[in-house]
Image 1 (cartoon, helix red, strand yellow):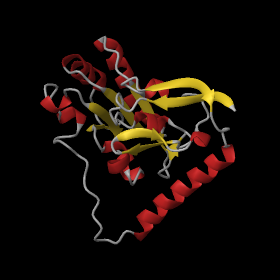
Image 2 (cartoon, helix red, strand yellow; image 1 turned 30 degrees about the vertical axis):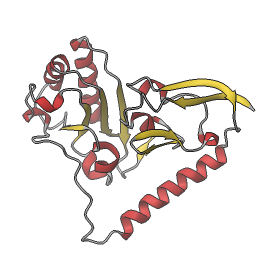
Image 3 (cartoon, one colour; image 1 turned 135 degrees about the vertical axis):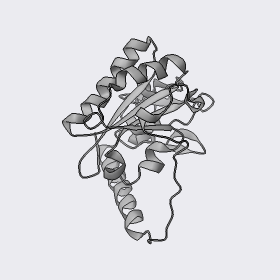
Image 4 (cartoon, one colour; image 1 turned 90 degrees about the horizontal axis):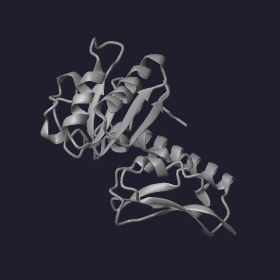
Length: 218
């Protein structure tokens, strides 16, 4: 059948994983450092991943392909969830998962606005609690990113001012905001959005919400 479906330019893809996090069907995976469509039957053709790609590597085209299979998508997502739970449950106490923290300090209020590792960085702006609520935060969200953690409720700091300076002084490649579903985490999103507006920069941003029981909310 002929329908809309995404195409990924492998030469343009920078492996930032923003499109993977944005795909509600789990149709995209990182393979050899590049995002790939693992099954055309998983892609609904709505293109939620397009605006998240900072490299412009994803396009939506109409062509002959297989039909979108909603039931197959549900089975695929359930398998992924079961595999993740099995991996966590079967890991022995001595199993080590390498840290993906690339710099120190990582607390936003302690990071210098002139820190050189901010140049061309894919930023992960994470609420403090997300690291405790989501067990695989290092591999799924921190990998390949510069992580800045903050708590808009407990820290008596206007984060928008510091973020504005960071955005002004550095070429930031993308921003992923990882927050909890609780109301106070909205302050982190507001600070980032305000800083983007004040900086005058156009930087691709993506907001991901974690539930209090450690699930990604779609």
